[in-house]
Image 1: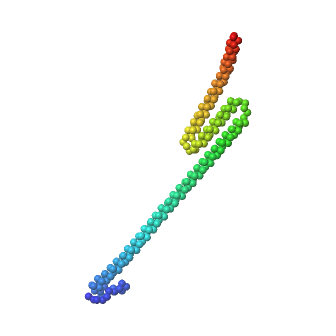
Image 2: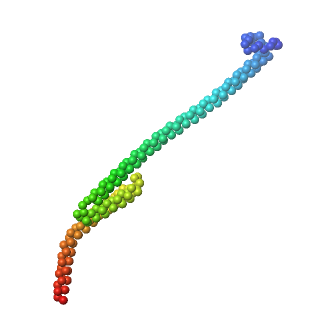
Length: 199
């Protein structure tokens, strides 16, 4: 076996001139170089994997943040629309209350300046005005979205209908009873006068 030194990696190798020991040494050297290259490649692959994982994590965080921002923007738009709708409802309610107050003020003015030809009619209108004011005050205390509001309106309408019927029947009874009471009073006066004249 020859004791020639092992040629470097850049030197062309003539396999026939090399001995067995030289081939083994050359194989070891090539294997070491291959192992170094493989370990360097594995280290680079690990670095690339870590960098890729960091990039993936950063992309996931960015996507999550973008989704959150989009949800927040959507929620903000919904809240803004809801606030605008509530503001419109409140403005409509305020306009309705102002209109009702103006109607009551006009009606009160008409009642105050109406000629008093019929005192009972005047009394009835005044009582009706007081009741209507109290009903409007009680209705204003109920929130507009309350489920009790329709029931309150129905109860008020029922009370108004019952009041109108009671007024109608009372008036009819008054018209029916008035001549009879007058007749009874005349008869009673004449009866008293007749008995007094006997004594």
